[in-house]
Amino acid sequence: MHLAISAEALDAGITRDYVLYLTSNRILIGAEVDKILSLSAFTLVLAVAITRARSLLVRSVAEGTAARDLSRFFAPEIARQITASERRIAAGHGEPREAAILNLDLRGFTRLAQTVTPDEAIALLADYQGRMVPLIQANGGSIDKFLGDGILATFGAAVPPTSHAADALRAVDAVMADVDAWNAARTAAGQAPLRVGAAVATGRIIFGAVGDETRLEYTVIGEAVNLSAKLEKATKDEGVRALATAETYALARAQG
Image (cartoon, rainbow, N blue to C red; front, side):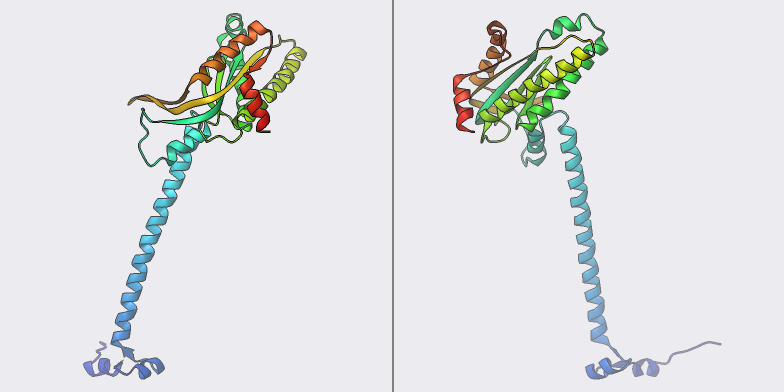
């Protein structure tokens, strides 16, 4: 049995009367077309919004992952600058800063490393760095680089300074307190105590990227950098654990 719908029957279901359309099951052609167009436009807008939201989410996750990965090789502040930078990072661009430079040195490590296995030497170095780095960062410092058993840290270079001298000297206090606790634990375990030297200098430095197209590195350049390194070596001659310039000490007091 076949059902056939006549043209008359179809015409009977269609109306041009808007009131009749609202109060009955009749079809108003214009209204149905508007519905279809509205639904199509809404679907298109929704699809574009979902696509853009997905793209932003993927980008956000990728940037967050990149920042976390970079933070393993750079100071967190520098990693954020690299991932957030809208321009290509290249050598030759520097920014002036008033900063504090901290140099740390694990005394006698080279001689000690010759008396233990390579694994023991690296484990000791990792223990030392694992203790010092969080203390420096907790006091506002950024790790510029590891120099064997030395650590070069900056305060106010990667981020414009507010209390760079005071932060650096607070970091030195925290480092020395931790070294005392570390040595107490080592002595209790029958191990020889270790000595750490520190020095801080402040002044105007240049912060920027150096290197070439295949290898870039953020670093600091300036008299304060050289002076801090020389002061750290002078702690041995002076028989002290830490030294700072008078300018640094006065500035730290002024900064609280």
